[in-house]
Length: 204
Image 1 (tube, helix red, strand yellow):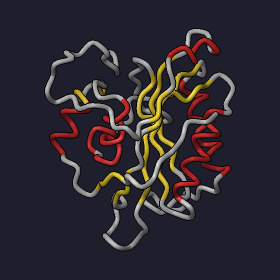
Image 2 (cartoon, rainbow, N blue to C red):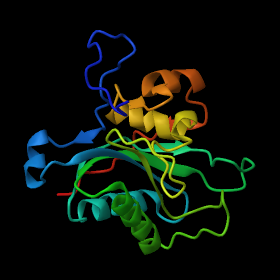
Image 3 (cartoon, rainbow, N blue to C red):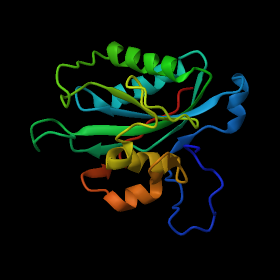
């Protein structure tokens, strides 16, 4: 089953217009790649200059050979997941759509390298971090590999993932779980809010 669906009914009242703060490139940019695959990446930061770190991660993705950043969601501010309220700073979260010729394993390695470049610390499972780079979906790949489960095993239950993902892929499907729009409507937007005063840019 395909992770993404691009043929949904255009008259569906649940599909909202793409937010003005979504930044996207035209498909013509894909001419720089040969047979690229579509992938969706989640970014999060709750330490240091969060906006600057998110932008740095986007720029680092774009600098990766065989990868083009196609769309960037609005910035969301969210409460930390899995910890007591008030024990950590809030997160800035965003979702990025990319096209890439890298296989999933190489994309994972690149995401981990970006985390290391921004001094990501992994001492605690739900600990604070300068940057978190997660692959949410890769083309139509469904995998139970413990190193990289696709689609992301918890994406369907996290508003801080689904809200920005919906902004950039309003008709997206999460394999085995359903439409992003329906999943987001089911769990709601509690604990997440759009930071309309902030914006991430596509790399030049």
